[in-house]
Image (cartoon, rainbow, N blue to C red; front, top):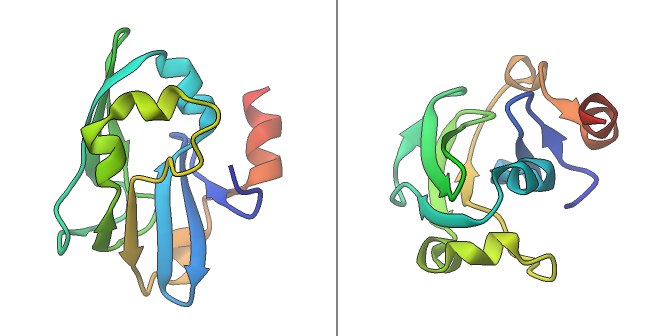
Length: 125
């Protein structure tokens, strides 16, 4: 996972790709905790979500979980590879584990409760 990502306490990450364009996904820790992932449901391009809204569902052999938006925005890309083959999330060598890319004009208030990756790692250890 990119160490410049910001992480939520519910284990989602947000990574700024360029101004107003962000990658959203689950942290490696969350994926490890879920175990063998068997299903991922992602939103459609053009869908708009507010911060803390559920935007995806992920199921493993252990449990089903909801995935929450760390910041508000509009979906501009969806990782169809993990929707079609969710087991790729379990593969350590798989680099593209992002869920969606969004356009967002989120202000600093929306980022205030997100943790730097290093702080997130300390919190989960």
